[in-house]
Image 1 (cartoon, one colour):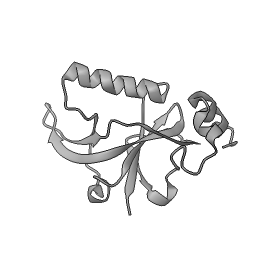
Image 2 (cartoon, rainbow, N blue to C red):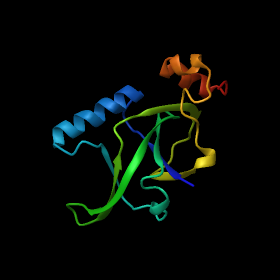
Image 3 (cartoon, rainbow, N blue to C red):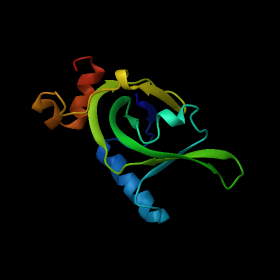
Image 4 (cartoon, one colour):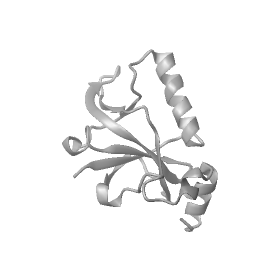
Length: 143
């Protein structure tokens, strides 16, 4: 069974903003075609995640989208500290929003607890609803 990660997205106000920041970073750094995110540690359960799981992003206090994790690569930073590069698929997939409290680092998320992608078994109205409205309704416990 796939295992996922949850990570806070600090700064972006929406899924579109996160996508724009990832694109701008790749253009500025001249990096490969896939977005990457660097963390301090390699997850101990990385074999259950890489190529199977997704990184679920928390934006403005709401778990609202995911990106498939293509690879988890150990690397050493310029300061000599070991880190982990998470290589992500370019596509950001909106999910059924769910409130999420702040935390540091990342957290594991089991496949059974992962929210459904919007459009999979959802009413069409929810997928077409503006992201900010979905987030607000989820924070009120109405979704």
